[in-house]
Image (cartoon, rainbow, N blue to C red; front, side, top):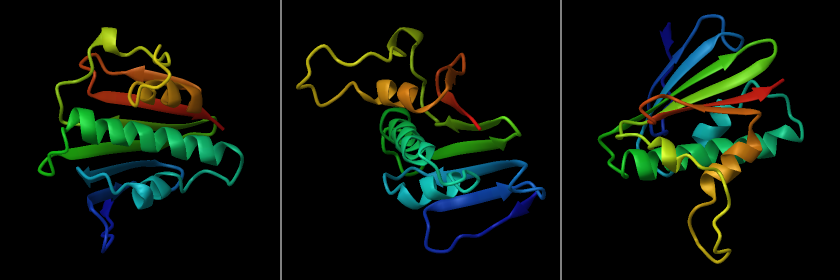
Length: 147
């Protein structure tokens, strides 16, 4: 693996397999809500298409959830993202340092109160990806998109 420094970003480490972009990549991000450049980096292997906007939206929402709900905006904590590029799938695993989301909280329905300012994140994530899975602990979500 090689370390790629990105000056001016909040990334602390980016480890790329030598076969990048067809291999696996691991990214570590300081807890921050400044996510636009990071999301764009995660999207590099995607060909520009109508899927790009939805994928960007879903990744951004998953990262915001990890920062706000998982790491509780604690800048000393890290968000780790693993990206896998296969011939048939693009997969991102987003892991925070929090206690995890309990199984009964992993619902992805819209809130019953349409005026609610919360409760849409998991619904958005599920609409943006072909497959969404959680680690048993609930502090890592895997998002997969068919190519």
